[in-house]
Length: 79
Image (cartoon, rainbow, N blue to C red):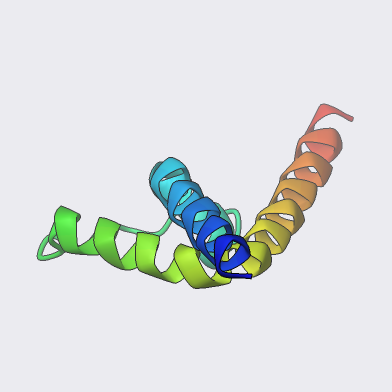
C-alpha cells in the first residue's frame, strides 16, 4: 500500500514539474494570465508542484477540458 501512495505522489510531482510552463491550461482555462512582476519564479514553481502532487488526476481532467476548448476554437477559426 505504501508503494502505491509513493508512486501516486511521485507521478504528481513529475506532472507538476513537466506542466509548469503551461499551467494556465490546467487552472485558468485556455487563456494565459498576465504574469505578476512581483512573483518569485521559484516559489511559484514549488507551489505548482505541491498542488499537482496531490491533485494531479483533477489537473489532468481540467487540462483535457482546456484542450477540448482550444480544439473547438481552432476548428471554428478554420471554417
